Structure formats: C-alpha cells, structure tokens
Image (cartoon, rainbow, N blue to C red; front, side, top):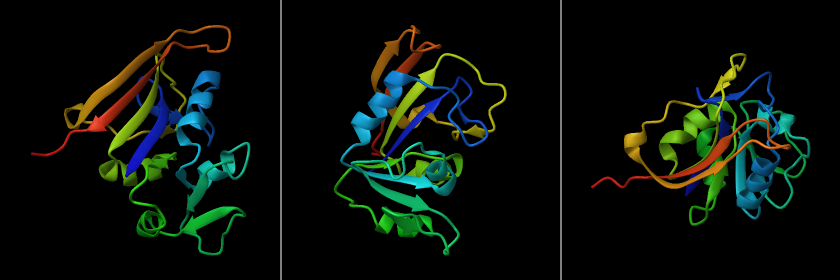
Length: 165
C-alpha cells in the first residue's frame, strides 16, 4: 500500500529551491510519528535536503536515474518499478517527495496525509499534482491554529481513495 505524506500551501505549493516552504514544528513531529517504522520513498533531491540522512527508524528508498549514485543506509532504486519492487506490499509505504516522485506515485496511492497551510507561497517552484477530490474520501480534518511555533493556520487532512465499484 502506498500513502503520500505532504505539506502544501493553498495552491498545492510544496517547496522552493529544494527546501520546505516553512517550518511547522507540530507537522514535523506528526510526520515522524506517522512514518517511523515504515518504508519512505523519496527522490534524490529530497534525500539531499534532509537535515538527518537517512531518516532514522525508517527504511529509506532513494529514487534516482543516476545508477552511479548510492547513499549509505539507503536502498537505491533507479526506476519507479524498482522502488515498487523494494516495498512490502502488505505494509504502508510512504511517498515523501519531491514533486516528480509525488506525480509518479499519485495514481498508485491509496491514502493522502496532507498538511494544508492556510496561505499562499508565491515564490514556490515545486508543486503537488492536482487532486481530484471526487476520487477521495476525507477521513480526518483537524484544524491547527497559528501560535508562537507556527506562523500559519493549517489543517491535517487525511484522504482515502474511493473504491471503484
């Protein structure tokens, strides 16, 4: 099973210059809590942007087209099919970015964990693919107001893909 976990702005912005758009302390804690003990799949640029490499207490799969590259403590995949083959189909596997990886795995994903920030980021250069909400059931919608650690209001929204009848 593939799940996507992402933080977006109002216009599905996800990053700028290979960095997160902002620091949301509680969201980063939630990311760690949800993904710990699972496999995480990411592109090479996402891996390189991590403050701690590889992510601890997770199986890290790095997807890149460059077969000459290998990162310590990571499984390497050189195609989406190789990444899929490295995953346990009976467990939840998390897609953690970037934009190209999200686009490739979106049609294969059963669940979306979206932290939706209540703001726009006009200088963003990376975006999540458009979401057809007719394909998804909203199963969680939790509001988090701005505070001394969070400059923006945001929502934790979890969607499960509707089953085709």
